[in-house]
Image (cartoon, rainbow, N blue to C red):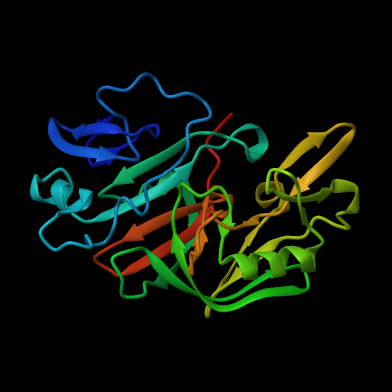
Length: 260
């Protein structure tokens, strides 16, 4: 769907076009040949919208849009739909291109400089949950198709052990919610600001028999020796995010709830 400088859409993986301009197969947006998206469709897109392509002769989605005057500046924003009382769990996300919609966030916007890379990478000073400092001075990729904070296996195991989470037969780190002493905010700390996320967002829940289980927000990619940390939608769903390629930065602001 294209409205002026905006593109909004559900997440699918198929050929996509904007104002008749072919973009190709990308993991976001409203595809031309796909069935209507379902409520459980995965949110994705930040890494697909790389700042620059790994191969110099291949343009990114933003390059194609700029070259065809679909947008005037290579900025896009990510907004997760609010539901009742701004509680988490909404499956929808909106990608807006070329402008920053003031109706979707509350001031101020806090910006973090990007690390030189073809990906959207930022340096995190500290990650805390309550009184626990879990990470310090680590590089994070922003990738919205990840439902967790993903990291190297040994580091994830260390953090989950510290927090009292144990992996089950499906490889999910969880513990009975009755053992969660208090609902503590998870906080991303940068040099000039901190970004808190409520446990209502970062801690998912499921039933195991009569027991309510709380899932750790930290996970690793099975069968992969992945050295990087990834900031997924477990955090991004609670904020308004601005991807500014020209400015070489990512911005975060309080998400404004527009639902009734």
